[in-house]
Image: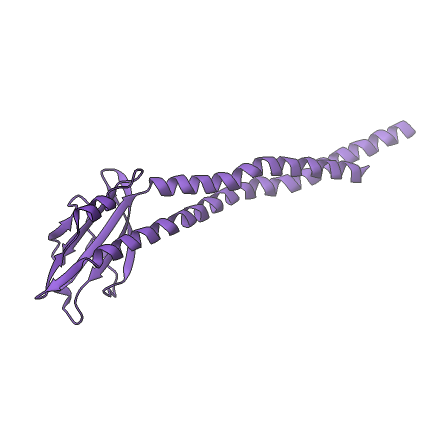
Length: 204
């Protein structure tokens, strides 16, 4: 009789242990993929920020080389400055300066132009915006800015754009994700083992 009770108690403990473990692990298996997705989102955002700032600085540097003479834009970008813009060893970098009618004033003709639908409703000269585009199957991040004389009509503004491919951003975001996700492959199994040990000791 005592042996039967002991066996029944053991069966109850195992059943209870399994049920508690299921209720604890099921949410973990559900939350972990969400955690990876959220980590990816923030990693991409963090990786974009410094490179967006670099694009902004390049747009500003080009804009400082543009002068308006009799309301006509003139750009004095030296050969060394042009070479510096294209000196990236990892990503391809493009730039151009366009008149409002889309005519190329300087730079790379292959850089995709800003579409009218992508132009902000309220455009101010000197303000840098960002957009995503693609060229020959490569994703591009493009910084752009309209530039014009004070009180000049929009028809006399010029558009400065600098775009680059996303390889450096991808490498940085992958490093951020790996630094967050890889430790979880150690911590989570260790936590599960400790939980199992604690449950088994408590049920005894």
